[in-house]
Amino acid sequence: MKTSKNIGLVLSGGGFKGVAHIGAIQAIQEAGIKPNYISGTSAGAIVGSLYAGGYSPQEIRNFFQKTSIFNFNRFTRKKAGFLDSEKFHDDLENFFPENSFEALPKKLFVTATNLIEGTVEVFDKGELIKPILASAAFPGVFTPIMIQDQLYADGGILDNFPVSPLMKHCDMIIGVDVSPIKKPKISDFKHSYNVMQRAYYLRAMPNAEIKFKHCDIIIQPKQLVNHGIFNSSSMDKVYALGYEEAQLQLELFLKNRKNDSGN
Image (cartoon, rainbow, N blue to C red; front, side, top):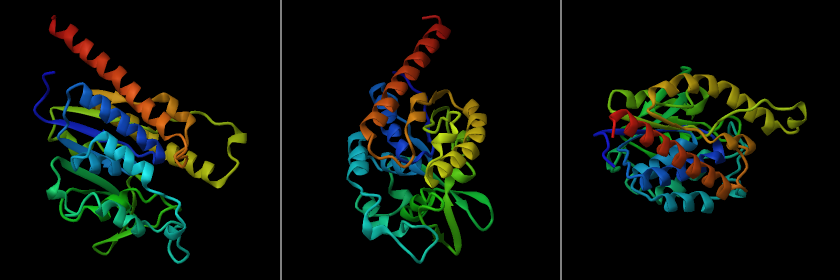
């Protein structure tokens, strides 16, 4: 497939549903498309950084399968959250021994929320692992990360679809959103995490949909509404949903482009 010179890939937040990003990347690669600019937040920052680091979809999938989130040793009582984000540093260091944005084969942008200033910060230079941890620090669950005397948490709080960093660099942008929402029933709110998940979606989705117009292709597996952001038991299904939806949208895009060219 003939591709644009600079292709961007946007990866949204979405907790464990971020595994769908991996399936989408697999389909994108199989279509012969090679993004060279990546922008991600939260789960999208983790997947995006590994992809930008040159790891294959299978290697990224293995990372999610083998990394135990709710390990007893990661819990904390003295910080603002019950899982210590810093204790995931070693997991990422195994994949990023140089711990540097500049060492990545692809250009990467990672976004996080500055809790003090109430702004979105875009990281693309210098130390890599702390910005990834900050971007994925879901409020109330993972502890915020201190970077240069500022406190950062989940990038999805203010921008769950960080397309902006790519717009001045890319001729074509593919967006993958793994946070579709549906109207819940009152009976769905049985636990505190159900409320947290709903609040996350309500805050993130309107802003994301506005930004979809900046993408040439949008991949949003609708069936992900049936999977929770904290549920790791359905990774294979979530991966498949991302893969299948990406295949469908890529096929439609290529068909429409062929029709537009008159060939």
